[in-house]
Length: 150
Ligand SMILES: [Zn+2]
Image (cartoon, rainbow, N blue to C red; front, side, top):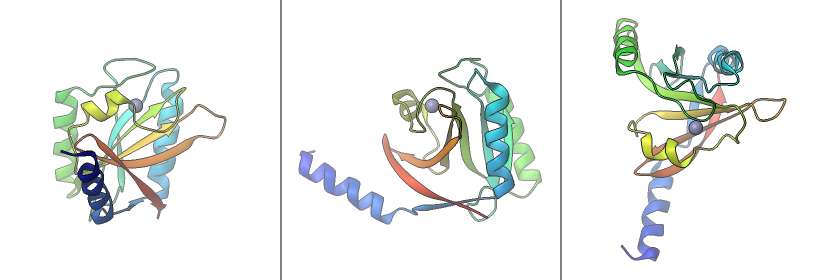
């Protein structure tokens, strides 16, 4: 695809995109607390809710036990999906922490992300004050979303 056309397509997707994400204030605080607790390793988990919101956090074990990557076992993930369904919610987000990096998806984050329909939270603990950002990652493109705590 010519560069110009590629840019136009990306702009189009970004425009069509829901540019907001709604997360419960307590859940927002929970994912920060979980991220701090796992230091120096990356923390990870998934989020669920109704109408695309993030109402519940499901902390997961980072099976890579790494300070710069994360992975969730398929077994844990399936278990969480079951609980989410029982709670009559839907899978709406994934979160993980960056213990020493900025709150932007790494190259690995982008290439490993297989759920383009859910939002992607990153908690950076690089500074004294945690920084949380949210994105949607579709076809290796990253779209920032404004976080609204409710
Ligand atoms: Zn990451």
